Length: 104
Image 1 (cartoon, rainbow, N blue to C red):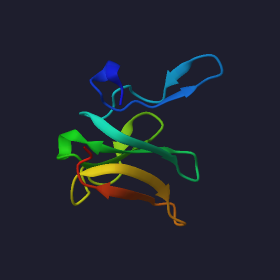
Image 2: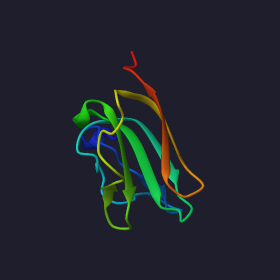
Image 3: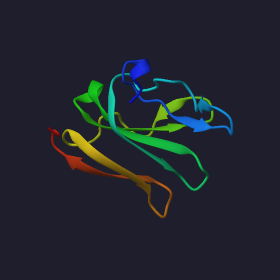
Image 4: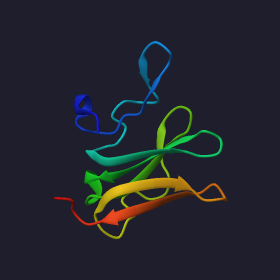
């Protein structure tokens, strides 16, 4: 969650001197909570998050080298997502463990 970009998601890396954006800052279209970052076997970054623009369900996006694009459908979880854990299967597909329900 990036407070400077309306609480949307932003990914940054340290270049040895400064923190710089990886792709566009604030790439999620709405507030992104419970973000989780994982890298596939080719070091492509994926981000899973609770997507406020999709009924608080899970959305996963990947960086294609230029832009963030959806990895599958937005808001794909059956209910509201809470704490997310993102990893990759042996076949290289993203797998997300989702603790469902609103977190109070």
